[in-house]
Length: 317
Ligand code: HEM
Ligand SMILES: *[C@@H]1O[C@H](CO)[C@@H](O)[C@H](O)[C@H]1NC(C)=O
Ligand SMILES: *[C@@H]1O[C@H](CO)[C@@H](O)[C@H](O)[C@H]1NC(C)=O
Ligand SMILES: *[C@@H]1O[C@H](CO)[C@@H](O)[C@H](O)[C@H]1NC(C)=O
Image 1 (cartoon, rainbow, N blue to C red):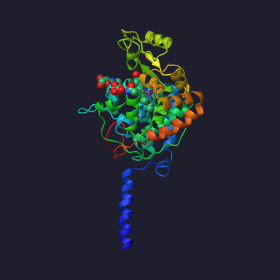
Image 2 (cartoon, rainbow, N blue to C red; image 1 turned 135 degrees about the horizontal axis):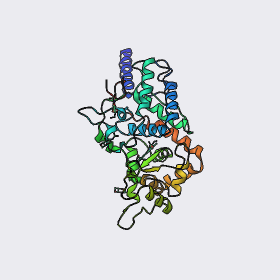
Image 3 (tube, helix red, strand yellow; image 1 turned 180 degrees about the vertical axis):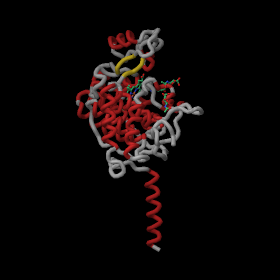
Image 4 (tube, rainbow, N blue to C red; image 1 turned 90 degrees about the horizontal axis):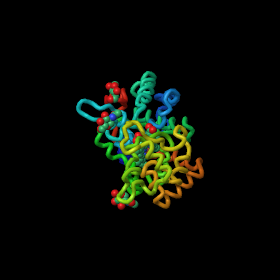
C-alpha cells in the first residue's frame, strides 16, 4: 500500500517536472556537446563582417522572450495565411536572422533534431554581449520552439514612449522586477534607433513644448538635425549611446545627463529606486555587468507553451 502510494506520488511529481520544462546550463552536454561553441564561432564570424550583428541578436532575443515566452517565435517566417512577428510593426531593426540560420545548419549536421532555435538565439544573444566587451554567464538551455507567431502580438512589446509605470507593468507581467527593468535597459548600450522611435520627443512634443523638457537641450538639437520634421531618409536615426559597438556602462552615464534616446530610457530617472540603480551602474560598470547577467538569465527563462525542436528556424515542423 505504502509503496503504491509512493509510486503514484513519484509519477505525479515527474510528470509535473517534465511539464515545467526546467532549463539547465548543461542541457546539451551529452546530446550535442559542441552546440554552444559552434554558436559562438558563428556569431564571431558574422560580427567580423557586420558590426551591427550583436545589437540585432540581443534585441531579437528580447523580442522573442516578451512575446509568447522565449520560444523562437520571432524567427518564424510569414506564410500565405499568417503574418509573423518579424513582419509586425516594430520590425525595422530586426535583422541578422541569417546568423541563427547558419548556426542551426551547422548544429543540425552534428546532432539533428536536438537543439532548439530558441536556445540558439539565447546563446547567440549572450555571445553578442560577451564578444562586444560585456559580461558572460552560463545560459540555461532546454527551451522548445513554438508553432505560433503573429504580427499583431508585437503590440505586447513595451514601446519607446512608455513611462515608468507602463514599463514596470510590462515587465512584471513577465515576472521581471524594477531592478530587472533598469539592468536590462542597459541593452541600449549597443545599437541604433530609427527616427520614428523618438521623433515624438523632438517635434511637437506637447501643447507647451516642441521638445521634451526632460531631454538635454543640445542633445535634442542634434537629434533634430538627424531627424528633421520632413524626414526623407528612411534609415536616418541615432546610435543608442556614444560607444555603439561596445557593451559598457556609457548608456547609464548618458541617461544621467538627460541624453537617453527614448522616453522609456529617460523615465528611469522618475522613480527613486530606478534612479539610484541608474546612478550606481553609471559609476560602476562591474555592478552593471553583474546585474545585467542575472537579469538576462531571468528574461531568457520566460517560458511559453512550446513543444518542438524545429528543423528550420524559419518554419514550424
Ligand atoms: C524597456 C523597454 C524597451 C523599450 C521600450 C525598447 C525600445 C527600443 C526601440 C524603440 C529600439 C529602436 C528600434 C528602431 O527604431 O530601430 C530599440 C533598440 C534596441 N533595443 Fe530596446 N527596448 C527596450 C528594452 C530592451 C531590452 C530589454 C533589450 C535587451 C536586453 C534591448 C535591446 C535593444 C538593442 C540592442 C537595440 C538596438 C537594435 C539594433 O541596433 O539593431 N531593448 N529598443
Ligand atoms: C523568409 O522571409 C524572408 C524575408 O521575407 C525571405 O527573404 C526569405 O527568403 C524567407 N525564407 C525562406 C526560406 O523562404
Ligand atoms: C515591417 O512591418 C511592416 C508593417 O507590418 C510591414 O509592412 C513590412 O513589410 C515589415 N518589414 C520588414 C522588413 O519585415
Ligand atoms: C503613465 O502613462 C499612463 C498612460 O498614459 C498614465 O495613466 C499614468 O498616469 C502614467 N504614469 C506616470 C507615473 O506618469
